[in-house]
Image 1 (spheres, rainbow, N blue to C red):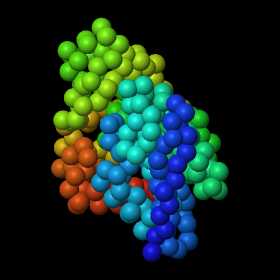
Image 2 (image 1 turned 30 degrees about the horizontal axis):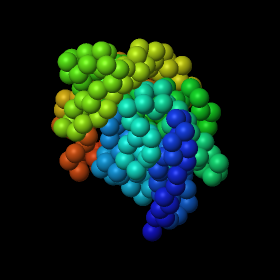
Image 3 (image 1 turned 90 degrees about the horizontal axis):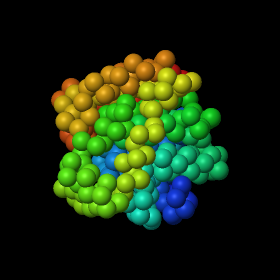
Length: 252
C-alpha cells in the first residue's frame, strides 16, 4: 500500500505552499515532481491519476499547488511564469532535502512550459515531461478576453474569467510573459524530453506541442487520440500514464 505525506514548504514569493508526497510500497525506481496546469491544483484528476500510476510503477511522486492556488497560501494576482518556475525549483529542493531527487520533472499545460524553463536550474534530472504544453507561454493570453487585458493594462490588475472561475491577474503577469523563451530552454535541455499531445486539445493546439518537441535535441512526441486538454476520460488518462511509464523504461 502506498504511503502519502502532506508537506509544506516556502515558495518563490515567500508564501507557504502545500504539497503531497506519495511513496510506493515496494522498491523506489526514482522520483517525479509534478506541476499542475494554469489556475488548476494538485488535486485535479490529471495530476492525481498520473501520480497514482507512477506510484504503482514504483515511482515516488510529489505534487504541489502553485502560489495562490489549491491549498497553498499567497496571492495568485501577484504570481507569474517567473514565480511558477521559482515554485518548481523550491519544490525540487524540498524533495532533494528529503533525499529523493527529483530525477523526473513533469508539467501539464503552462506547468509543462514552466517545467522546461525550470529544468535549466536543476541538476538532478534524468528527464522532463511536458503534457499538452505550449512552446510559447504567451499562448495563455487566449484565455483572457481582450477587454479584460485592456482593463489590466489600464488599472494594473483585474479579475478575469478563466474556465468559468474568477481569478485576479496583474499587469506584472502580462509583462512577465514576454521574457521567457521556452524554445531556447528546450534547445538547451541536456536530458530527454517527452511531449504528450492531447489529440482533441481545444486549449493548446497541436502546432504548439509539435514545435516544443522539435525544439529539443532529444525528444519524443506522443499523441493520445481523442483526448481533451485535461485527459478527462479515464481511458485517456491511462494512455497518458502508459506513455510516460513506457518512455521512462526507454531512457533509464
